[in-house]
Amino acid sequence: MLDAIILIAFMVVIGALIGGVTNSLAIKMLFRPYRAYYIGKFKVPFTPGLIPKRREELAQQLGNMVVDHLITPESLQKKVMNEEFQRDVVQWLREESEPVFCSEKTVNEWLDMLQVPVSADRLNQWLTDWVEEKVSRTKMEYSSKRIEEALPEKWQEKIEDTIPKLVDMIAGRAEAYFTSPEGKAKVKVMIDDFLKERGTLGNILGMFLGNASVADKVQPEIVKFIKHEGTQEILHNLLRKEWAKLKLMKIEEVVDRLPEEDLMSELHTSLIKIVNIKAHLSQPLSHWLSPHQKTITEKLLPQWVGKGTDLLSNRIPNLMAKLHLQKIVQDQVESFSVARLEELVLGISRREFKMITYLGALLGGIIGLIQSVFVMLFS
Image (cartoon, rainbow, N blue to C red):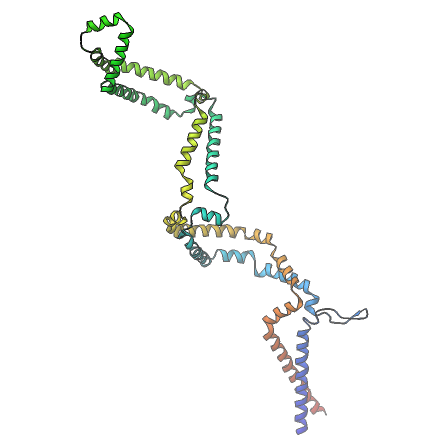
């Protein structure tokens, strides 16, 4: 009886050892040896191990698996369009943009920090060049046209409607001037000069008019002349005739009479002063952004993220094709040493490999037990 027990135990142990060792050896042979061994010209069988021998094929298959089954355009599109993902992106952007909205750094400092080649001088120069280009283009486009062709009809109608108001304004200003002490003095000087130039005739005329100043008598008549309807009609007709002549003139004729260089210089100076780019760039960034922070973060930012994810989702297939993920994975795996690959695989499956070894030992022990039973039955 004791001999039977010893036999069974011996065969079970031997079977377990054989099963465990063979499974462990098979696992080791997946990676070991790392290189081929030769006896003379003959290569030792099973060298190198399976994974070192098929590393290129393994790398290619891993690349195919990643692109075809793991990181596919459809899975990325689904992730990008996920509402929770979009909310996370919006929240992350809000947190990251908070320091920007509160920044006390000036716009100039931000431009320098971001290495954006923009300054007040460059912007002013751009503004000057832009104005010159627009003026030059407009001049070339309209120089051969008459004023009535270039001006919109509404503008022409407004100018014609303004002529009566202009007549009233001129008459009013002239009346106010000649009734003022300054106007009265001017009239007196002009009449005195006129009488002096006439010599004896002027003296006789002065004596005939009496001791009162001639200016005192002429001034009211001038005012009456200005206020007379006929005078205003003459002025009205005169302005209309001048406007009619002006409309028939070509724009180039008008422009040629203007001091173009001086006008452009004044225009540039005025624009630079009005826009005041230098002062704007010297303000803290928060001065420009903080008033709009709520609108940007709560309204615009979700819209931008939504549109951005839509655009990205539509471009994912093309992006993946251009990135060549399969080639990246393949090159990365091929760049690993066999020891590194072994470490990676064992790091993931060490426990499962141990269970395989234990299973081999268990099966070997069961087989040893069955063999020992057969040996005893047929001995």
